[in-house]
Length: 213
Ligand code: E4P
Image (cartoon, rainbow, N blue to C red; front, top):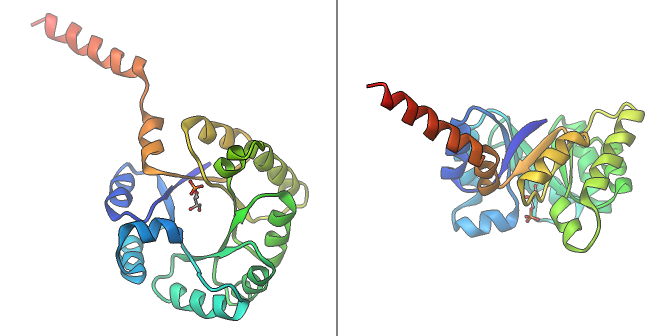
């Protein structure tokens, strides 16, 4: 499983990229709005830092509008992936982008039928939202496992991005259940690294080393 970071904050992107594990970035309108910057300018900054896929979401609700917006976003850099919401209009737009060889990430996926439809329309990625399903008492991880099983069984190459990740256990379980990618908030990325026994081990090694002097 690969790691994407889920943020529109350029400092977070840079610092995650410095770790050498970053395969891509996802943004959404809420994350961009929090930054208070021009969306296009921020996408230019992010795509110049990161080689992997950078998802940029369209705002239009009709296919025609999505296609127009998506083409403008895709023109910013070759590694832009157009993020499209999982609607009937979204599916039409995904098909059009696929015909144009523009990569797409179908977002706000909450059941396996939506994922299968998105894949068949030509989506490069589908994004099931784990945390938001857990929030309403459903099992987000079951959805990852089901989509993974269906895609494997039918030889579908669309990649599954485990999204709406809230904590480290989501990341481990997403990997075990077949997600190709987890898109992770910066805070959770930091939590993945930490273990109290690692910290204690370093402290002990250093104190033993210093005793010999
Ligand atoms: C994914 O692409 C979305 O940007 C994101 O994971 C949504 O997460 P949230 O439910 O924490 O807003």
